[in-house]
Amino acid sequence: MTATGGRAAGTGRGRAGGGAPRDRSREVGAGVLRRVGAAVALPAVLLAAWWFASAGSESFYFPPLSAIVDAFGPAWFEGRLVTDAAPSLARLLAGYAVALVVGVAAGVAIGSSPVLRALTEPALEFFRAIPPPVMIPVTMLFLGIFTPMKVFVIATGALWPILLNTVEGVRGVDEILRDTAAVYRLRRRTALRTLVLRAASPQIMTGARQGLSLAIILMVISEMFAANNGLGFTVVQFQRSFAVPEMWTGIIVLGVLGVVLSALLRVVERRVLAWHRGLRRTARESR
Image (cartoon, rainbow, N blue to C red):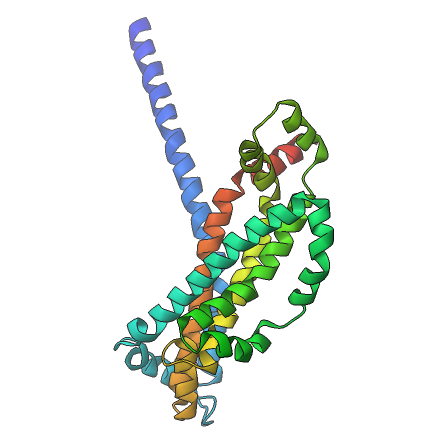
């Protein structure tokens, strides 16, 4: 009886232990479904409203969504994704990467030095106040109308939010942590990687999100001014040829591109700021 009871108890414990991982996986799956549902719900409602509201439209400029959907395949799946969307994406990523590297590097240097910050602040405020599209005609005089001009415009426009947020993030590093790093005689590179950049990373990621939005806008504007390919160029060509449903498909492609890039940046942000979320969770639980 004792042995039988022991085996039964062991079996019960095994079943209980095996059920816990399954319960956790169900909770994780339910959480993912809730997040996906919350993300998809509003766009689905808006698309449905657009579909039914435009169903009987006879306006030349606001065609039914069904006509736009019918025009989407011929407009983009017969070569334009390669000839127009791919070059735009390459310019966008190149300009945004330049803005990230220069903005974070310069922001760390300026934020770490009160003297350098005092010297550069008037110039930074001056250049930040100039709308980047205004510089496109001037940039065309020096760099022409080809890819370097567009990358330069994207980089200079996306630079400022990244740079200024990095400066503020570095300035906000706790002085006690700086003193602790000095007491432990951390090397400059180690202190920069483990203290300064990590403490400033929430502000840096805020600037990166803002910079991404500006980069997409400037990509489109630079291609509308002077180009022979790209998403902005294609939308303008559709508009000039009075292909209005096709023009709307280009606008939708730009919106989808923004959503996808924002989602990818959010994934990066979650990994970069995992320590920050854990710190805030611990602080809430300790109250």
